Image 1 (cartoon, rainbow, N blue to C red):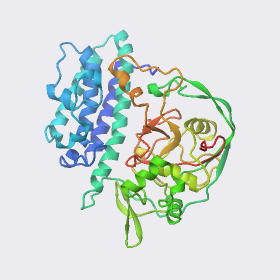
Image 2 (image 1 turned 90 degrees about the vertical axis):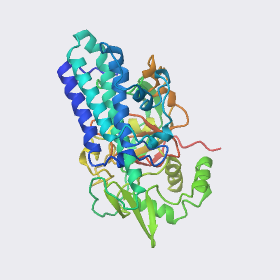
Image 3 (image 1 turned 30 degrees about the vertical axis):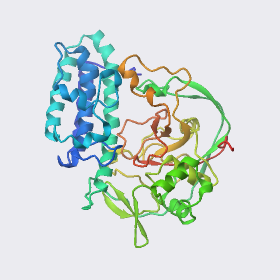
Image 4 (image 1 turned 180 degrees about the horizontal axis):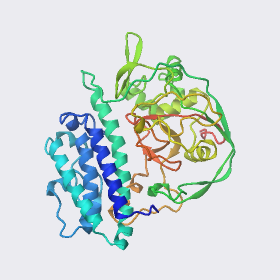
Length: 428
């Protein structure tokens, strides 16, 4: 959904801005870096660069370019992600074995589609431009999602390299957790969903009403220092704190700390995009799953907020400003900063797990055609996260944005904010 009054000039300018930013993110990486797939959830950097290009070729050029022909027939197959209506695709878990096309050839593909997109948009009449601009703008936000994923994925790739290479960014100053505060939020019948004039994804709609009991939100994210206390108190060894599926994962995969933490001679270290350093107690804990977040909340005698509570709380009391997002180029969560009496870290630092399953809003209907596969088909076995993270592009956050991952996912830059009061998790 969008009401942006695009002109051909402004649309091309935004297209160039988004596309060039992807290339800037990839620039520090060698062709070899861009080819590695370190686990099935991770895609090679060059695949991200090619897939977002395939998106414009498939959903814009294919239907509107005169005498359209794909840049390369096999690319149509290699760089389709999950769109069944478009045709067959290469297996996700095998993307790392595709050594060709190489990173340079993907750049040639990007340049070709970029030129064709500029030519197409420049030649559109006003009526066609108005109809097509929604799809092109969706392509911008789709590419921004992959810019974030590109950084998350290369973080995992580089974490497995014994040379411990650094991508970019700079470490934060060592700090201790400040005092956790609480912010009261009025309940009642509230509106949830996208309501502004700018772009949203379809899963943020329709706008609807939800009844909430009064509740409290922690004024900042849970920190590494607080997580160390959870660990020291047997947090990863106490079945009573965990959901059943989570406890099974703890035991099956040997979880004993957040994803990128390792212990050496009794000291915990954390891998980041700018290197590996001793765990900084004052920074938000990151790369924890929903299972871990829920277990910590149980240990603390609190709970995770529902996504409706998070959105209502942020709209009610948080400033509508962006925090530590990718444009700061820290590429890692920062300390919360001085207390303000309101919510700190609402946008940026870490995606915040909620207690809400990823389900359609009342009255949701996916769009017709292949583009309707974008979000709706994933509304099962996933949990909602809110707020953005230090890898999220600036301008890509909003109060109604619904991110989602499986509850066991740890490679995403995810943390947690506690809630209290209101409606607790149901007891058996």
